[in-house]
Image (cartoon, rainbow, N blue to C red; front, side, top):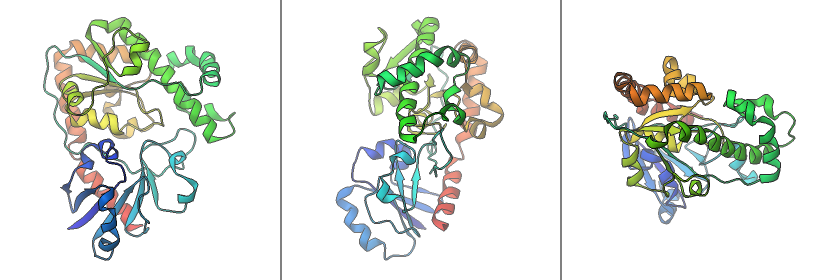
Length: 322
């Protein structure tokens, strides 16, 4: 048996790990999650064989042989310069370059969606524009084209005229928010009576909006419903904290196409993703009103992710072998 201690200075960080943030046995590894007041133990534990460490956002002196830093909610832009020479992994892929080393989290305890006859469309997220003047100019120049190709600014060529990744990243986050609003307007236009929108920020824009719901309440809301996911604002990756939370809690995922969607969903990519309004509405219609298709989709989603623990173990083996 090999032991992995996941260390963090902040308790809330474990929420982003979903089921990986719980003490458990996964294959040959036993995962133990410790908060900051236990971190001093790591200096003693490092002397013992078969002990490994994952440090969330850098909270101990990393030994490259048996440890790595895991930076959440971002790409390499999240990593402070003083840690560049450490063994670092992130949980998101940038669309500007291919420098990110991703430690891929997976749905570990997959709850199969149950068939809910009166299922609803669910979407939960935040909305915040940080570089309003600059980003709005970019958005006004592309918003009609984005209606045709939702992945327009997820392509590296789109960003060639911008000099720094920092500038690209700040504009990218805003464009993702503008796009969220654009897509939600379409969903509300067509499915207003079937749609529940969560997030305090949205109440300033739409009449139909619920406040933020945390913890077990949102998990219960996902269960048995069709859950729209519009991707992370930090980059492009199918499996990240929100989409994993949906799958682990019995929600049926319908996601804006990500750069690795084909790799994750394979031959079923078109059933689980959309990249324009036509494919969005087509999939919503089938999943809301075709009972046989919906039941089929439940089974397919479960089959895709039921063996995720093995993928995680294989990944850990490769990382700790470096």
